[in-house]
Image (tube, rainbow, N blue to C red):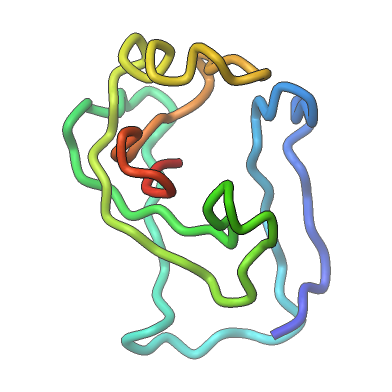
Length: 113
Protein backbone atom coordinates (compact mmCIF):
# COMPACT_ATOMS: atom_id res chain seq x y z
CA UNK A 1 0.00 0.00 0.00
CA UNK A 2 1.26 3.48 -0.76
CA UNK A 3 1.33 6.47 1.58
CA UNK A 4 -0.91 9.35 0.47
CA UNK A 5 0.21 11.80 3.17
CA UNK A 6 2.39 11.81 6.27
CA UNK A 7 2.60 14.17 9.23
CA UNK A 8 5.84 14.27 11.20
CA UNK A 9 5.60 15.36 14.85
CA UNK A 10 6.22 19.16 14.95
CA UNK A 11 8.84 18.73 17.71
CA UNK A 12 10.79 15.99 15.92
CA UNK A 13 14.53 16.46 16.32
CA UNK A 14 16.53 14.44 13.79
CA UNK A 15 19.79 14.76 15.73
CA UNK A 16 18.42 13.74 19.13
CA UNK A 17 15.66 11.51 17.64
CA UNK A 18 13.27 13.11 20.11
CA UNK A 19 9.51 13.06 19.27
CA UNK A 20 10.28 10.41 16.63
CA UNK A 21 6.73 9.62 15.55
CA UNK A 22 4.56 10.30 12.51
CA UNK A 23 1.04 9.68 11.25
CA UNK A 24 0.59 8.03 7.86
CA UNK A 25 -2.49 8.25 5.68
CA UNK A 26 -2.61 5.44 3.16
CA UNK A 27 -3.87 5.92 -0.39
CA UNK A 28 -6.26 2.98 0.04
CA UNK A 29 -7.97 1.53 3.11
CA UNK A 30 -6.54 -1.59 4.71
CA UNK A 31 -8.43 -4.80 5.20
CA UNK A 32 -7.93 -6.07 8.75
CA UNK A 33 -6.89 -9.72 9.08
CA UNK A 34 -4.49 -11.75 11.21
CA UNK A 35 -1.53 -9.84 9.67
CA UNK A 36 -3.05 -6.33 9.71
CA UNK A 37 -4.79 -4.86 12.76
CA UNK A 38 -5.15 -1.52 14.57
CA UNK A 39 -2.97 -0.62 17.56
CA UNK A 40 -3.92 1.24 20.71
CA UNK A 41 -1.92 4.20 21.95
CA UNK A 42 -1.92 5.25 25.61
CA UNK A 43 -3.98 8.27 26.63
CA UNK A 44 -1.99 11.47 27.18
CA UNK A 45 -2.32 11.26 30.96
CA UNK A 46 -1.64 7.50 31.12
CA UNK A 47 1.71 6.45 32.57
CA UNK A 48 3.45 3.67 30.71
CA UNK A 49 4.23 1.03 33.33
CA UNK A 50 7.75 -0.49 33.47
CA UNK A 51 7.85 -4.26 32.86
CA UNK A 52 4.59 -4.13 30.86
CA UNK A 53 4.98 -6.12 27.65
CA UNK A 54 4.47 -4.19 24.43
CA UNK A 55 4.82 -4.88 20.73
CA UNK A 56 7.42 -2.86 18.83
CA UNK A 57 7.82 -2.74 15.06
CA UNK A 58 10.36 -1.25 12.71
CA UNK A 59 12.57 -1.71 9.69
CA UNK A 60 15.83 -1.27 11.57
CA UNK A 61 18.40 -4.00 11.61
CA UNK A 62 21.36 -4.90 13.75
CA UNK A 63 24.27 -2.47 13.95
CA UNK A 64 26.38 -4.97 11.97
CA UNK A 65 23.84 -5.09 9.11
CA UNK A 66 24.33 -1.42 8.16
CA UNK A 67 21.20 -1.75 5.99
CA UNK A 68 17.52 -1.33 6.66
CA UNK A 69 15.37 -4.41 6.28
CA UNK A 70 12.72 -4.59 3.55
CA UNK A 71 10.27 -6.54 5.73
CA UNK A 72 8.72 -4.92 8.80
CA UNK A 73 10.10 -6.58 11.95
CA UNK A 74 8.14 -7.01 15.19
CA UNK A 75 9.02 -8.10 18.70
CA UNK A 76 7.34 -8.32 22.11
CA UNK A 77 9.48 -6.57 24.72
CA UNK A 78 9.15 -5.18 28.27
CA UNK A 79 9.01 -1.43 28.91
CA UNK A 80 12.07 -0.15 30.81
CA UNK A 81 12.28 2.67 33.34
CA UNK A 82 13.77 5.92 32.06
CA UNK A 83 16.64 5.64 34.55
CA UNK A 84 17.53 2.09 33.47
CA UNK A 85 17.32 3.03 29.82
CA UNK A 86 19.58 6.07 30.28
CA UNK A 87 22.17 3.86 32.03
CA UNK A 88 22.14 1.26 29.23
CA UNK A 89 22.49 3.87 26.49
CA UNK A 90 24.82 6.34 28.21
CA UNK A 91 27.35 6.13 25.34
CA UNK A 92 24.92 6.89 22.52
CA UNK A 93 25.43 10.22 20.70
CA UNK A 94 21.79 11.17 21.37
CA UNK A 95 20.41 10.96 24.89
CA UNK A 96 17.27 9.18 26.06
CA UNK A 97 14.75 11.88 27.04
CA UNK A 98 11.59 11.94 29.17
CA UNK A 99 9.51 12.08 25.98
CA UNK A 100 10.75 8.65 24.88
CA UNK A 101 9.40 5.22 25.73
CA UNK A 102 12.21 2.72 26.12
CA UNK A 103 11.49 -0.98 25.68
CA UNK A 104 13.41 -4.12 24.98
CA UNK A 105 16.32 -6.26 26.00
CA UNK A 106 19.31 -3.88 25.71
CA UNK A 107 21.83 -6.63 26.45
CA UNK A 108 20.54 -8.66 23.48
CA UNK A 109 21.67 -6.90 20.31
CA UNK A 110 18.82 -5.73 18.09
CA UNK A 111 16.06 -6.39 20.62
CA UNK A 112 15.20 -2.87 21.71
CA UNK A 113 13.31 0.22 20.69
